[in-house]
Length: 365
Image (tube, rainbow, N blue to C red; front, side):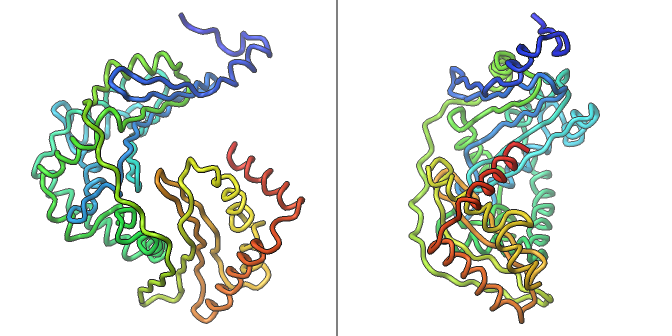
């Protein structure tokens, strides 16, 4: 039964309709479906999340998770690569994917009337991709250029080196893109084995937000996504203990790009809340301590910020800075001084209030 438009509802009914909490169901095969119904929009965003990423890459196959993600867009039994791209773009929608340390996501954004098209395309690429040998060889060239592009971008490369230093030799320290040598040796059988091992019902979360009711999303998920049920994959090896490390790479450029920080808590740990407050106070936005003290007051850098990344097994807290080599010692001294000051003096009540307010606003916006 079709719901009446919001314009025909009372203010109380509208308020109730707009405040629906996310809903969660588990399908018979173990796939989890999570939705947030937002009836006042005309669009739907859908993500098929796989709880596997570059941390699951074998050392001899670094980059296989990311490469596999690319290959899901290179042709199925029903669609070639162009038809996959054209299927949603021709409707004004978007289709894309990304690979992280411990997740891979395939997502679409479409008008609500095109829900079935998006689900059909997503389910088709994840179930029926053919991994044609000629496409694999062609894509190796694409990913190789992506790796080289990273190497030529010091502001991005420094974050890779930072994560590598925190976690090596653990797979969490592997580059998501992999290495030219490991990518060049990937073969079709290895891709299929990796898919079989990790693309199973237990590792899948289907998330949708927008003008789609939960029961409808459950219905189309049951009808279209048929991920196999297989035994759980072994857990990742234990993480290395925190240790002081310094890693440097020299490049013929005018600035120094620096990351400093340490391991942090996983995303489900209660410590994530004070860490979010710390990150917001220290290095988020133009009013943050680092921005004010290093850029605004002393002009030591153009770009300086802190950041927090939380994963299933671990996390990291870091500070990024780009500056002239001659200014680096003073800038690092000021960053470390801020850590010492916060540890020694904490936050004032006023700082805590405004930082919480800023954080809440950022989360909502």
